[in-house]
Amino acid sequence: MALITQIDVEKNVSSRENKKWLIPFILVTSLFFFWGFVHNLDPILIPHLRKAFNLTDLESSLIDSSVFIAYFVMALPAGYIMRKYGYKSGIMLGLILFGIGSILFVPAANSLQYIYFFGALFIIACGLTFLETAANPYVTILGPSETATKRLNFSQSFNGLAAFIAPAYIGPMILSGKNLSQAEMDAMAPAALHAHVLEEAASVKMPYLILGLIILSVAVVFYFTHMPDVKDEDKEGADGASFVGALKSMRLRWGILAQFFYVGAQVCVASFFIKMATTSAGLDEDTAAKYLGFFGLTFMLGRFAGTFFMQYIQPRILLIIYSIIAILLSVVAIFGTGMLVVYALIAIAFFMSIMFPTIFSMGIDGLGHNTKIGSSLIVMSIVGGALLPPVLGLISDATGSIQKGYIVPLICFSVILLFAFNGHKTNEA
Image (cartoon, rainbow, N blue to C red; front, side, top):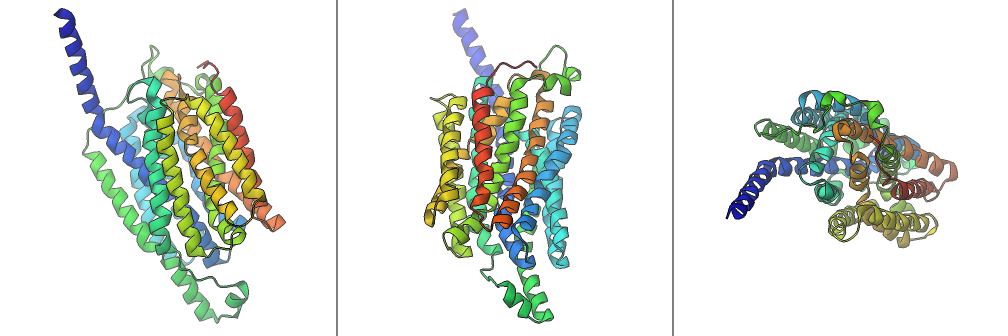
């Protein structure tokens, strides 16, 4: 009887703990959707602004650079605020920056100055840095450590849902379908050219204004919601955390490297998808945007499928398999022709879908009181999304072939494969 009573008590305690974390888990998971949404507007924004301001591939790739450089700049401050004030404070600050940056698209479009879009995107990305620095580790510690990777993949699946919705439904609102050649633009009267650029730039105002207002509303919800913070469980306490201690972990060092190349690969593949579809397969802009929607849908399905497969296959083994397939598909994208290239890129979305959360959870595994520092360092490595797309753009401009530029994601997936083979080694942190 005593044993039965003890079991009942343990079940009741477990049930109360699950309910305690349910609402915070739902709210934090919603963040994955929102930052996925704005990130997956970038592949629409790049060809749109390239056309509106007559940019080269290298110049248009700087849109990604303005976003992802913020991760490098703000990750450590975000980690510091999280350690000092807790996850909720970091999330609140992130949402406020995210919302303000989105609303700033309105004056940026009115100014007709390309540089102001960079500024608005940078502020958005500063907010996203806080959100990702908080949300990724927050999800991994809401339950048993052995299922952390599966939980993170589940939450990240809503990032994939946004990857489908943003280009499929918001993309047509931004892309005008008008494609003027350089000769046609040169032949236009100054007033007509100004009106054309103004029209192209104005199409981004309403989507980003609505997004900004929604994000600020979510910030209000977070403010009035009790979000229990997770204290570092270590005899040294949070004060024992240090960068030197965190970087003793071989898993973390490999995780930082792998995440740098993964984000670079994802941004390269997604941001130049429309350019690849229009040049290699001869699709028009609107049709290419619809295929980009399928790219996002495939990414989402890959996340859910990966979460399912991880019940039967170790995450590291699955990462090895997916990395090998992504490498082979990159070869097809480089040397293929016609719609085969488009289908290869869509397939890459499926097989790279599990990479970010898997690398993240493997990288911070076992860090203890250094978890928040490790999270900040891995988020810093997202700067790969700022540095590698310009390399692809430079190769494309130099060779006159966007396909040749896709050697960049091929190399990236090769590095991730090396991480999958080496990133499981024992932590020293």
